Image (cartoon, rainbow, N blue to C red; front, top):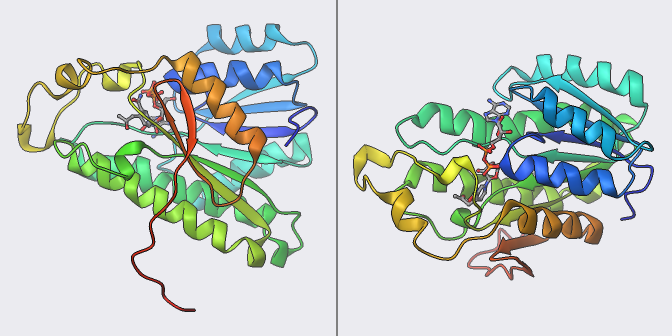
Length: 254
Ligand code: NAE
């Protein structure tokens, strides 16, 4: 997909991976980059606005844990301004296995609810034009960091949800793929709680192994969006971009 002149909504577009990805997106000259994030970062938003005069960058406060009806309201406001949306990126996430409910609420339910709200506008059965959903999941959704089993399971859940969405594209008109970063140097992985404190040094131990920068991750992120491959499971690790081949262990047959 050529991102020139496209309209993009980016949930968590101001986070560690999010902000560098927003920068890469702005370089591609979309018409609109609408950033939804829980916390504002006026300096970063001003920087994005100044980067490319062809792009309209807007920010709306948004917490992914609000009910679907609230998200629909916000999306109505956005659609009234931009008329069409081509791409929705879901990137909100927390890593703290002391907060079990909140992890599921943000990493899983928040992503599913935001996507569900978007279907009001995109679903071809409602006369919508379809669209592309890009979900930031994680390599921990493939193989867990077992010391953070709650986080890892929440990411496995969104990998699964995204694959189902891709298979439903012929019904909804909405395609989907996941981008799954490996360990990327952001505040998310500086220090975090393991489940029941099974490993107090989990962050330190992880960071003893090779990682990637947010810039490397962001460049491959935008390449994956440009490839626009329905059902793709992209791994973005150690500065590389690879397609993951998913092993089938079972088939519903329907
Ligand atoms: P970050 O903490 O900088 O960014 C988290 C983003 O989520 C911020 O923009 C924050 O405002 C937003 N957010 C949190 N709660 C929210 C809420 N209730 N409503 C709306 N937005 C909310 O961390 P990051 O590393 O940039 O993480 C961005 C995404 O990438 C997350 O989904 C994270 O799980 C995922 N991810 C990160 C890494 C990594 O190593 N940094 C990896 C894969 C996926 C590897 C691991 O899984 C450890």
